[in-house]
Amino acid sequence: MIQFTLIQIKWCWTVFTFRPSFKVRCVAQPRHKNGNPGIPLKSQPVEISQNSGICNAPIFSNAPHSYGAQSFLAKLNYVGPDDTKHPNTIQISIRIPHQDGYLPLISTYPLHNLRFVLSEPVYRQQHLCSNLILPEERNDIVDSGFLDNDHLYPPSHNFVYQFEPNLRGNKTLMLYRHLNLKSCLWTFDAWYHMTDLVDLCGGKIISDFQIKDAGQTYLTVRVPLYVYYVYTVAPTGWGSLQHHSEMEFSFYYDTVLWKSGLETDGKIGGDLQVLKVLVGRDGKLIIDFKTQAKFRGLYVLSHHTEPEYESRVIPPGGMAITFNLTQLWCQPTFDSPHQLWRAA
Image: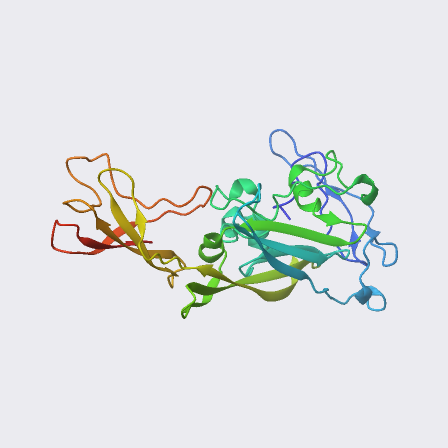
């Protein structure tokens, strides 16, 4: 499992995906500085016990060679703008029971080829919302991921050498610090903006409608979730048990309609009135509004006499979105014309 381990160092970083009753042994082959391989050295095979494991699964009690996986718990929570770490985001919390010989992989997209996904970085670039991709592999496309949490359980919850950096490298510890071996439970948390869930995580808007006479819009977003229990298959290879679920969250938001609009300060002023706020089929936020200039003239997107200035719609601070402003219509006059605009 090259994504979380390395073999080109003195110690083999331990990632346990061997189930009870498996026999394992170590093979080391020296190599001369000129590249010629030496005679490989093999240790005696050791059989993994069925009874003395840490997190035994009930399925192994009478059927040592069977396969089984327990169900998991996933939920979505909205984090408000007052949160200091993750303001205005959707938190995805996943709790997965651990059992010896299995490693959980989670993603919002299905995994089609485990061998390439675990060994080649290019196959993981689609899985931006997963525990497969490392923080440095996201290239700042999304701000958060399931491996970002640096929480370590208290020493009383840990086993000997569980977080020993001399035996496990940083990549391995990045994964295993989410495992509580006392409760045999994996814990993964990530925080995403709404636009990330729709544009990057495979989420879909399944309902978007305005409530009559209420000034509110109802929105429902569905996000897929795939959980794989990965295990080793003899003689060499990977197998998995797949769980598929879909998470939904719904909310209302106010489509602000002012009767008199917003008034600008200064001698040259105007009125602005928001007409409609909606989410398009592509998941983008769209704002339609109307302006009326309180001077002889009109508003423009840009002007050749002042090339350093342009009209823009700027979101509140901390929101990772941008708007493109276009003019939809304008009255053919310079005497306080009404103009229609769209920011998307």
